[in-house]
Length: 568
Ligand code: AMP
Image 1 (cartoon, protein in one colour):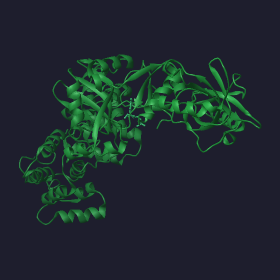
Image 2 (cartoon, rainbow, N blue to C red):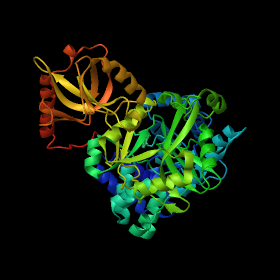
Image 3 (cartoon, helix red, strand yellow):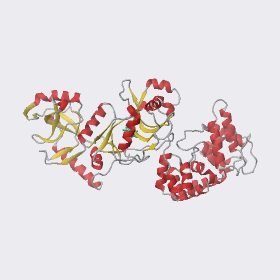
Image 4 (cartoon, rainbow, N blue to C red):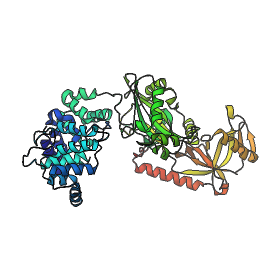
């Protein structure tokens, strides 16, 4: 496809306001792109190389203005271009207004470039790649000369879009979604299949060419490739109850507070990619080393890089950001902030693509190949056990837990309901401890479960028990606090006089005949002791009733139970 044809079409697309018509125009462009389909599918989005390719032009505005000025002739300087830009506000318009020779059919001045009209989209791509690869001393002059050659002899519309491409400011209203729909329309394949292929490959040129040449079978066959990032699977917020109700049992993992990293290893080289599929290998050498050290076979791992103290305790998320995307001073930064990698998924192992395999299978493969890099995970159907894991994770300084469907596939780019990050408690209740039960096993010599009560007019009425969210050390100190208040003991249970107030989180308040208050807490978790409150300040049955009523009201407003998680 001639670049001038591309430019005219780009102008048409920019002028089109309706999304559907934009898709038609882009589809038409792709159908007519011939050998330049890959480049054309990227250029419409303002991309020169595929999303996963970290090649950059490394051309700043000053260099681009200098090249434009040079192409216009001796009477125009880079500052004239800048002044013009200040007036029009858009580099495309400035470039279009220059006299670069195209409309007068002048032959060009630069070396090796062609006259307007005879230069293809592919030629422009090759030239721009040449600009990108120029490096080292003298590279500025090489870039300047090459851009000069590109701009010289351009027709006005070509100049408009060349300048925008070079500066990464295409802005004709075409994003990934438009290109997805246009590929589907142009080559008669379902948009969902195109989307999936894009998520797996991050390469719209590859997907467009495959759709044209091999149709639906072809794009369905686009597989993972080690070294080419896949879009990250995302989580929604949700509760443990929702997880268990949906799946029966849940994989429970620590939620690490760091940055998402996808690690690729081909047996020799490691690549690390960020959540936005940018390559970040250079910034995190110890992660790359850890991955290469742990793996013996080619693999793609998904995980989180976390900043840690010398003793391995996690540091706040902001700390790892100090290392992330850093190109200079990596070693010095590494001295200040050490980073650890925790792998929680395995997308490919030793020739086997695992995207469609259930999480359980991916987890087994992960443990098999990644050893210590693999996160610890539990499979549980017990809300209490899940709460205990959450308490441990929080105690260890992590962000919380993620609950995962053991049967769920890895869905790139998708915020589905197979991964739930546990929602923090919206409300907590301050409840009085009015009883306890002795623990079991290693906790046999102290209280392990606590009976909680709400305040009524004259007394305290039970609403539930809490056993989870309490570390061993905390249990010991609670035992010491409560033992002097024991009133009586029957079997393994003791009655305790109201003295200590617990702050308790929960997922739901239910009507219940089990407790004298008439209500019960689902999934209660110990948050802490309210040292500042006496039993007389504890929450009342009235507040519990109100919370129950407002939750019931919210459910009705949501059209029923399980209204779903927040999509954020
Ligand atoms: P959020 O950023 O709050 O949407 O939470 C999702 C993010 O948590 C993911 O993108 C990961 O970067 C991070 N994360 C930490 N630990 C895990 C884990 N075990 N499984 C999945 N994601 C995790």
